[in-house]
Length: 210
Image 1 (tube, rainbow, N blue to C red):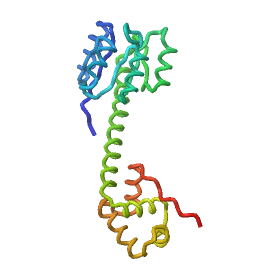
Image 2: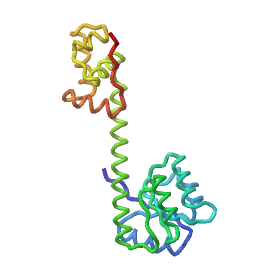
Image 3: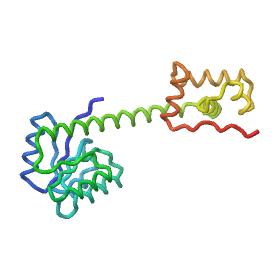
Image 4: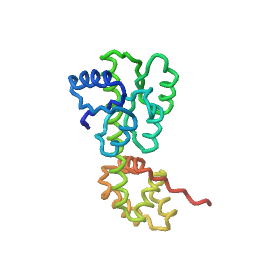
């Protein structure tokens, strides 16, 4: 999946915003600048998803505070922290808090572009995974309760005879439900059905104790 590669620069230094914007636009990126963390958070809800270049030292709200608020809001866009030489400990803390990476100012242009490329690959992988999970959940919701039970039993590795015993059904009835599951999930085989069930977070059926 290829996303529009938008970069949000959150830095109170106008010179940094302008020079970094020029570099990134020449490299083909869409760039949006924000004069402070507070200003960025105000427009976050309607902002284009992308990567965030976040300065550590800013008035009103520092980079760590902005990062904490992003996390609280459920924003999982990759954050690259921009830091001065005296802020390494803070940058390391940002990494522990989930930042993708940090760069010391003044940073090399090539290093910035490489780091952003890696961050976008992470973002795009996350989007693809999220879509895969959503699709799996939508397929699982199409199953009836009995079909769901049979799938959970298959996820537990049970053969048809044991599934029949666990669910108080005939083997033939289990076979019918199993065929329905495969059809509704559009699964070519059992392994495909299991992958879909796992992606949706389905839990295996627990066997009855003797």
